Structures are given as structure tokens and as C-alpha cells.
Length: 286
Image (cartoon, rainbow, N blue to C red; front, side):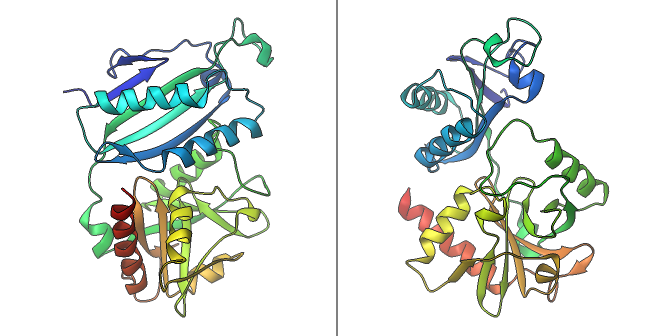
């Protein structure tokens, strides 16, 4: 059985036959936007919100969609239905299009290319919850204020992740040149201190993750005390608990940063309670 089922502009392929032109602007320049989500029992998690963000990212990089929201939704649903797996990792990529020649001018491209990747999503490893994961800090070379677009230009995140793996860490926590903690390479980052759960605000240059958004919504109906606040490395190193969130991984405890244990070096009680409440909330929503 193939590992992937891939939709390219409405046609379905496995990973051995999925091809796109070398003149595609996503390949040439990272000139694309994307979203990553997952399904629960063949239902895409917060698809409308992901499409909102896809079109918002496109606007931020001045990419004019030549496909409608309805057309993209139809192709996503078609791909999910054709997948042999019920729970899948779903990546939606929209590139500016295929160039007629080399060159930066966007007018060289034609219609957008839509690529939808699907593959089975395995359960999180048990050790994530029993032991937690380790992280490092990585200072970004550039600053960006306000919510980020999800574009194909991910070089800074790739560099950070490469540094993390070189140092045997799970991932890197991105830090602004001004010293503000922002997010993981593909996740939002949180801490808990004295019963209060904190995460950096979007205005510091953070991507509004959909799991992040869901947790804030869930908190309105629960006893969890959650708020946004600008945070530093010291805030994280002195925290009672830390964790990361992403659509495909849910909530993952962080128990070590830069080789230093967070509190007692074990997943925190509040983190695990939040994870249980989050999964229960998803069951109600799905």
C-alpha cells in the first residue's frame, strides 16, 4: 500500500507518480502558502478555519487565488474520501503557479497549483506523555510583528530544526532578535506558572495555530486560566510546566529546555489535565 495519496490540481497520485513542473513558483522561490491539519474519522479538523488562514496567508504575500474556496474544499473532500485511512495528516499547498520562464515577476505564472498531501497519522508515542520532550532556543535572524503567514519560505525554521536535531533535541523554540519567545518551528509554545497558562501574543510575531485557537475557546467553558503575554527565555526556564501545541500532535509536554529540567523534569499535572480536556472537547466538536 502506498504511504501517500496526493491530489495535484484535481488528479490523484501515489508518491511515486506525483510530479509537478520545475518551473512551479513554489519550487523556484517558495512562492506558496500552505495549511496542515488532520482528520478525525474522515472529518478535517477545523477546515473552515484552516481555509480562512490559507486565504489570509495568500493575501499577506499578495498571492491572488485563481481557485475559489469551494473548489479547494471540493478537492480536499475528494482526497479525504479516496484515502484508505480514516485518520490522516492533511497538507494543503497553494502555489502562485507555473512560470513560463525563469524570473521573479509573478506575471510569468499562470493559474495556481493546488497540491493536497495525505498520509496516515499515527498515535503520539507514549513517551511524550510519560517523559516529555526536550527543546532548545533558536534566535531568529529577522523580526516580524503581527500574525505570520504560512508560506513556503520556511528556511529559518528548517535551520532551527536542524540545529535541534544536531543537539539531540525534539525541536527548537524560536526567539525574536529582541529576546521574546515566539513559537516552535511547527507549533505554538506555552508555559504554566502558579496555575496560570501563558502563551506569546500574536502581536509578537506568532502564527495563530488552530489548536492554540481551540484551547482559548475551550478555556471560556472551563476552569483553566489562560492568557497571552510576552515571554522570555527566563520565563520558560523558571516555569512550573511547559508544553507545545499543534494540530497534528495535539498537546505535547516539554520537560527540558537547553539541557535544563523544567521543574522536576516530568510532564506537569496541568498540562495533562489540559490535554484530556482538549481531547474531550474535540470529541464534542466532531
